[in-house]
Amino acid sequence: MLDKEETITINDMALNFQEEIRSFIRSLPDVELKHDPMSEEAYFYGLRNFAHFHGPRHIDIRLSKPQQEEALKTHIALHHQYAPQAGWISCVIETVEQAENTKLLIRQAYDTCVSLKTRFKSGK
Image (cartoon, rainbow, N blue to C red; front, side, top):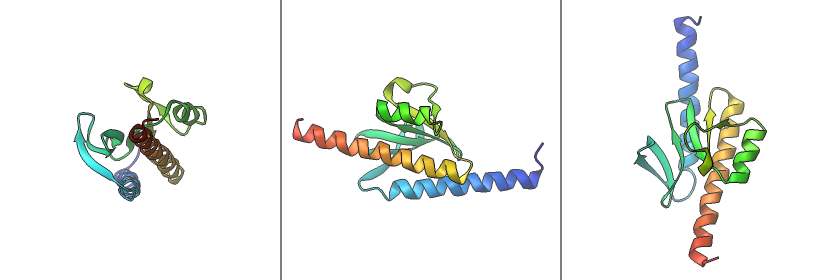
């Protein structure tokens, strides 16, 4: 069992990773933070929710189906409990490696949003 000091350290680390990921997401052009039924901290590109937090250590990310399959195959993401059919995956953020992998997946999700919006605008 963890003592109180170890628990505080783990929670502080989780909050630091969460803030690092928040900063990364906010650095992406045209991203908006909105309330969503899934989370009070959901990030949108246009009308598309592509990432949302569930507490300091969990984030859900919406990928394309091929990206989702790769993330699950390489074990950098977990199966989403409720909407895997829509490309959602879940990530736990407790280590530097997990935080870096999560940022890569967020970037993929963001790039997919941009690509979809561009395709829709051009009628392709």
